[in-house]
Length: 164
Image (cartoon, rainbow, N blue to C red; front, side, top):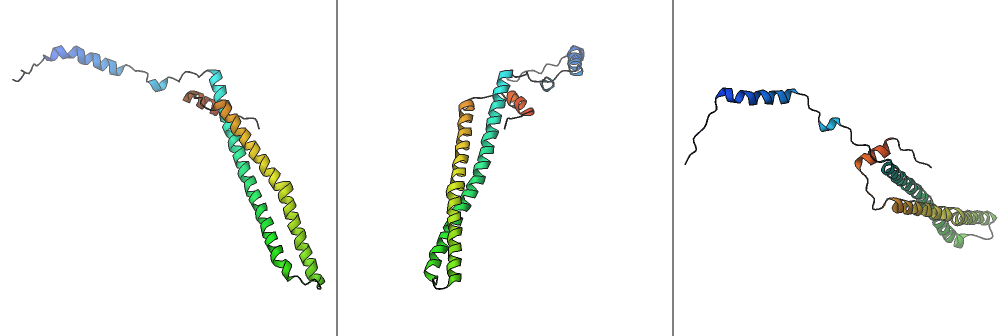
């Protein structure tokens, strides 16, 4: 069974069309025109603190990577010189003063490399690890499990200035 088609007189639709045209013609504010509500100052401050702590962790990580490279270089220097000493020792002619002096010089360089490793490279590496771990602990204590609104993150990062 088909339903009969009903046609409305043109004058009956005129008021509806006029109303629709009026609604379209009236400027409507879009949601994008309204600024988001300003996030609470405490949330912005907490977000800023977390951003600064993240930056500190990143800085400490960079420092740790640099120290790790220097540490590895020091280890390689010590190992290389110790290998050279081990290879050279059996071939030194103790009756030849030039060979003895050269070997003593090699021993002095090996001793200096080991002293640098023990007194500089190891302590600096350990301090860099401690500073990195402390920064991570601080970040986790202050920010782990916290969530911030996008508005708070944006506001906090706009003029971010962190203490060094």
